[in-house]
Image (cartoon, rainbow, N blue to C red):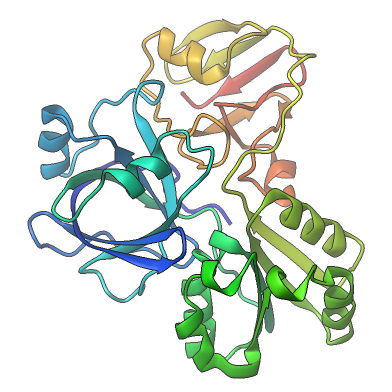
Length: 343
């Protein structure tokens, strides 16, 4: 379910309160507003955009005023992190960051440079992984993919819902939130590949299907998410909702040129095969927000008036794509010759 406000309209100046080791290679950041005020509310499944690498004067001034600063997603290091703290506690945000071996800048900055007292600008929160109503929930988390799942578990447990978590990891030492999850007893299946070996995902889904209809929420490595989607696709009683931290592979070898009409700006522009809609729109002076530029964060979601969309993002679910009224302009394109956009 897409949140009503898909593009953040303000930024917040945060201060790093504490940095803790949540597991081997995982740092847990507690962030508070610089002025001590309550932070914007959020719901389970939400994430923040954090600008890493330092705060400049313009960003600080805008964030202190609660405004959205002009920012360049092509130049800034902006990373998306799932909120994993207590939804009811508006005094702080908590995010967990995995040390990535092949870091593109965000992970290494958090682990090697960031310290308590540092200031960060955040955009959001936003939620493209909302918890929908269901009689039963199954959560499947792989590694750091546990982060958006934790607030969901707290919410369904408090509501007295039927749920089970399958939490898969390389080793127990690398799996965050183990101590908190222990309180839920047999509602949690924790499986460490070292020393247990590979997990029987097929057998797990056979058992889940036998127990009746359920919504399946999953976050983790791409191989796990693809397996979850494939398992649910063949089982009518199971519906999968997944969140990706990395984009799907996109074959752009057959990209072709097309036209876009910006309805509100009264402009017609050509999108060449080697550029995105996002790039072309910004080059022509239209202010649009962007962050990941890979189709995983949802910041650039734009309304579509008409035209056939070639969806290439990792945010929208199948039913939302079929509606054809929104797209992520950083990666998605046109299947035909023209798109009319609400810009």
